Length: 484
Image (cartoon, rainbow, N blue to C red; front, top):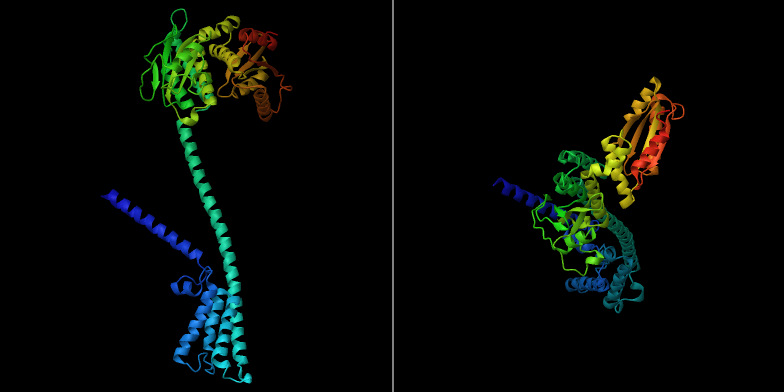
């Protein structure tokens, strides 16, 4: 009952508001003094095309009415006030000077009709007609001036109403845009860096699935549930599943899923295309336009470090605006990152064999970023800041160590004579490296009043490529001269 009463109250308020807006519109559309029916009758807001006929007819009718009551003096001459001139005056106020003068001519014609034939030439009432004409001209001038002002005011108000309507629409679109942005942030609250950080943690957790030889069971797709949840959040996948692929055969039982469960059809055109070509498949791909329709919107391969197909992510439903080339490419990047993570020992074995002092997560990310550069061309960098092994450099060393970014992987390498902070900067090219060095130097200058040269801090940089990252890291560490 309370809900119904509240609804009735809300509907009543909306109706009252609509009526008030209607009254405001009618009042704004009318002239000054036109708020009542007699005001609109005397001074209409818009002149009609039949104003001439109305002027002539009203004057004739007024004289005719007076003639019916006073047939010998229809113009009321000698009554002390020119009453008949009120009709041309009202018409002049109503339609302006020109039509007021036309009404005066009708009065003049009536005098000639009723008085002119019988009156002598000197009996023409000059002052009567002169005063009446002046009265009509003054009233007509007043009507013309205020008519022009009202017309100009209506034009200005019309422009302001248009501006107000446009501003209201823009405000409404801005509110919708903010709501859409809020929904997007709720549906996709993580950035690329946050997503890669979570995937790095999943890769580290995948070590629990390894056996005694320290090799992970890649075929079981460890961490697939957490990975698919993060991928669905980052790429806005509504209904999707991850399945294993062994020897080009699809296991129809998903190892992870998001959204409503659905069946996996192994002979679907998108799945077969993904298995045969090891590439992303979607209905708008040129090679799939002539195939039978698929029940899925996209199929993305999960490729191991050796380009071996170990799984497929099947997407059945996702927002239309998210079905773009950039979003699907981002999905492929995340899948490659995940595949390299579950094969972390294979990816990082070369680096750990050549540089055994490197931390595991540093070697893992370096191997994955090297593969990422080889497959997609995304740049990453390694920066080393070399410090002396003395007490004066301890505070500088700690300050730089605290200045790391969230996604960076830091390795505090120590030698016999010197020590270094080696920072792996994912998704960062030469510009990002320069900005990082400027930020670190500004921090040292603000904190200690020294720069790299004054504090004897050496700088070495390495551009991550897809060719032999372990050998490149060995040469990079040798350039740092940590042993003297």
